Image (tube, rainbow, N blue to C red; front, top):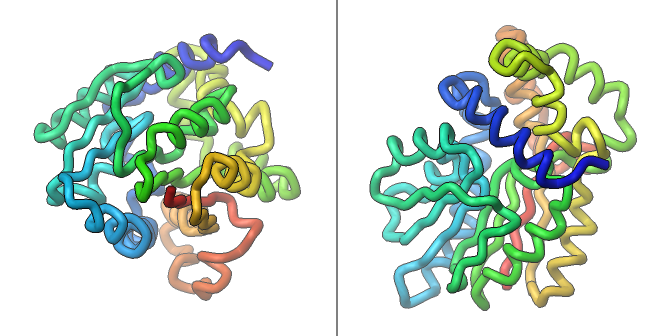
Length: 266
């Protein structure tokens, strides 16, 4: 177990170092993944926001370069993005000047209002004490509002498919370790940043769902996905077309998928 502030510092250094080319090799920006996430927002997020009479307020924890902002761009919404990395925030501000992006420690940040949409993407697994952030995000979600936890590593896959995970890290994902060595001189920055992949077994989606139910969320849905993994494999081997060849029933609903997204309504 590492101290959570030490891991936060490693995340800041690592993401500042890779900010300039973070989006260049990110499987989440593949057409197959973007299509899937757009569908989730259209079906499970936007109808809830449209039900509010007020202009929706949204907050994005660990916003990075603005990945989730792409899915709400063009809508009338007040949005605040927060992140520990000034380098990543600079990219988000450049892409979305209409919104505010502040440097904040996710643990320490204490807003004075609640939000209609509280969201994060691939952030929980970076944090030693991710349950603390889940509780904070739950408390900041207005009644009727949406909590969106996107693209987190599935505990079931990381627990039961360890050999596959190790192979993935040493092949398709090796460029992240190489970047840490090149930019920071130490591969441990990448390991500490991707904390629950190296020092844990992913994130337990079912445990989070139970936690949110205890917080009073009335609808909690877990969506499993192999699209991110398939896109990464396709990036490494362009002739491989797993997102095209695999039936949707397996690609989007397999409980041992590498990733999951959880959407809950309070």
